[in-house]
Amino acid sequence: MKRTLTLKQWAAALILFGGFCASTLLYYVHSHQDARFESFGEEFFLNEVQANPIHFHYTIDDAAAYGIDESGLSLPVYRAGEAADDIYELSQTRNSLSMINRSALSQDNQYLYDLLNTYLIALSGTAAHPYFAEPLSPSSGAPSELPILLAEYQLDDAADIENYLAILSQIPSYFDGLIVYEKEKADAGLFMSDETADKTIAQCTALMNPDALAEGTHFLEITFQDKLNALSQQGVISEEQRLSYQSEHNRLLTTVVAPAYDRLADEITLLKGRGKSIGGLAQYEGGRDYYLALLRLRTGSYRDIAEIKRLLYQDLQFHYETLLHLLQTDPSLKNLILQDPPLLPEASPEEYLSYLQTAIKQDYPAIPAGKDDAPIHSVVKYVDPSLEPYSAPAFYMTPPIDNVCDNIIYINTQDTTSDLSLFTTLAHEGYPGHLYQTVYSQRFWDERNILPLRSVLYYGGFIEGWAMYVELSSYDYAIQMARTAHPETVRYYQACRLDRQIQLCLYSLLDVAIHYDGASLEDVRRIFSSLGTMDDESVQAVYQYIAEEPCNYLKYYLGYLEIMELKKQAAVIWAEPGETDAACEQTDFQYQFHCFLLQNGPADYRSLAARLALWNP
Image (cartoon, rainbow, N blue to C red; front, side, top):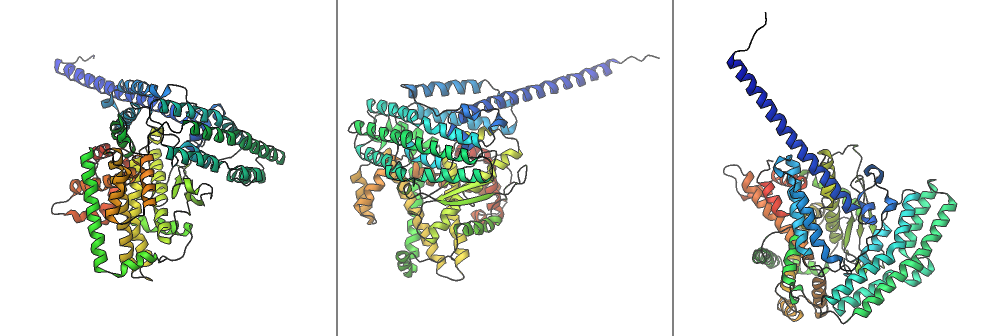
């Protein structure tokens, strides 16, 4: 017998059907918007990494997996007037992003959407001042960065070798573009000072030393030859290919790359005199606005200048008074500081790294296993003597996002002269510093299938702030390592840490004073004179470096202070009833806070603060 539905049954069925349709529609909207965003993010990522073949090679190990022919990439060549186009292109990108419904995205994609949007806004802030950037900076510019990147360019097969040689052949055009930009800077009244120009000219000559090239002892010749020999021994290339590639490499270095450096030096010489005397950004019209935009981009801090000064002044005063009290209660510390005695057990850099890897396990989470559970390797190398005057005290070579197993740390022996400085430097660059943070973040993203877009959003304030934070904590690990044999280590290393913090904080304050307040060399001389801590030649060197590298010290130390402010915020949010600030020092709290930073960074600190309010340990 055929049964009919009652009115109530029809109504219930319609309600169920309506609910099904609504949920289906909601699912479609969410999945559709996620797909749109992921497509947008992938396109943005690929455009960024393909803009420079060297950066591409360092970012992606398996180009074929991304459908890219690496041999078709070329070095970017600046064309006249292009600097003014950046602001429009960024605006177009933001407009395209705004067409995606953020609220319909998954939580991970919402966070990534916010990071990308904030990042684009920060980039737009600096792009609005197109001629303040300095790509030829003696400390971090293209002339000194390029040889290091070339020396560590990974060669796995003949295709890699040919791509590398093609890059060498493109360097003259790349430098010609930089010359065009520098001429536009000069026309805008923003060319570098004569003092900076002299340093850059001398650097160009030293980096492509003609005697070393003629003798076959240039470090680029030696590193390339070593790589070829290894590939030949493995049977990847024939002996005939090895000799041919080596001959072509020597030809390119002597007849293409070295003349490009010479031409760059000549053009800078011709432009000398068109810049102002060495000084901060405040001396230029629009300089303060650019500095504020650069500060946000470089540090990820969105505090105003007054608040940044207050944070730095409070930190400086606290650590200065703490050090003063320590010296007063233990007069023997002064002699120890002057002697700088070796108190750590004698060990190689690799042994220090191994010790740190074990020592941090209680306070830091283990690196995720990754899809293949491959072990993490690290190699410590030393900066070539010809590069020492232009290199940082140490640096970490970030591995490709699809192969984080092999990691390289460079040490500059010119700046790392004691066992303690070597130990804390390895903590900064290795464990639990850059190497650990980079590998942890990438494997965490891989586990959650987070877009590779994260890897091209550069947050220097987080990356260096984290490294600074763990470097300062590594003094405690050094104390644990040395205190049994040398009980005096405890107070001495505490004093060393305080001295390090005072110096970095003071330099960060000088950065603001020089670039925002317009402090002159004479002003800085008076500051150091009142402290009685530095000779005039050193004062001039500090002033010139800060003038040439705005926001660099702040990237490290303000980044560190922002992490400490987040730590205080976490202690309040996660506190149980009756807990005090002492919770910040408890192992469980430390571990969870580090999990938060590693799983949600790198990011700007405003985004991290918002994320922390919603995050449950």
